[in-house]
Amino acid sequence: YIPKDSSHCIDAVCRLIKRLADNQGHRVLVVDDSASIRQRISALLARQYLTVLEAENGEQALDVVEKTPDISLVITDYDMPKMNGLRLVSALRKRDTECSQAIIGLSGHHDSALTARFLKAGANDYLPKPFNQEEFFCRVHSCLNAIDIEWRLFLLANTDFLTQLCNRRYFFERGEQLATEARKHLAIIDIDYFKRINDEFGHHIGDDVLVEIAQMLADAFPEDTVARLGGEEFCVLSLGDLAVFQQSLDTYRQSVADRPIQVLDQTLKVTVSIGVDSQAASLSRLLHMADKALYQAKASGRNQMVV
Ligand code: GH3
Ligand code: MG
Ligand code: MG
Ligand code: MG
Image (tube, rainbow, N blue to C red):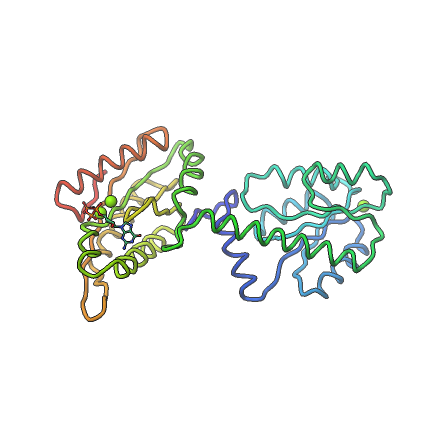
């Protein structure tokens, strides 16, 4: 329901949780310039049913993380050509993402200051080489548990429980960033006469309708940020082409109107009104202008879009 750009992450968090639910296990990236050490660590991790990726320096590791957003843990050596472990940790922590990886630093240098430097740079833990296998497993699993909790918490905090769309909090945080883009379009979608559905059929049926309308919206805009603003009001923030966006919105509006929703022994007709703005320079102005357009759509008879 969120744009497919690796700089944000509900998508990645959802994938991770799905991976775990499907028992596919965590992905762990092992970074060391020594092939034999990489092999040894990878073999240990594979014994724990973890999926292992490898990189031979910091640069390569960043590349792998960029291409594989759902990596749970990075285990990195310190001394490596091109980019050492400390610089890798700093670079990973600077990435603009909500779903970070857990990191364990490793080094054959017996230097206690290095432990502190790894931790200060943002590593979760540190192990000197060579290490005891049991200790290694304990530290790996404690990192994986921590990242699992962090990601689940992020998902809980940023999705709407009923519809599973992004929630209002996520929308405002992410929207502020997206609104700085030169080209962006915002649509507010409001269900028409929704109160009547509640009054006539009860709140639980109203909830079912909300879920169905939300799912259709998410399916119609897989590349964009789709959120439930509140109540029976949704929004889509797009960085795509305006003409395509408007066409997709109108197709969505029509498909909602055409789709009878089955409730017990009755079929229910639902329509939505849509307000769009593309001109405003800030998120609050975009929302204000789209809301004005929405008001016009309502006033002109509903089941329509005003741009
Ligand atoms: P309009 O066409 O002007 O938008 O009319 P409306 O009835 O859709 O709008 P109004 O704002 O009067 O009513 C919205 C209703 O949405 C009132 C509220 O009880 C209901 N609602 C808000 N959140 C939920 C929810 O989570 N579940 C259910 N079932 N109803 C909700
Ligand atoms: Mg090394
Ligand atoms: Mg309404
Ligand atoms: Mg409303």
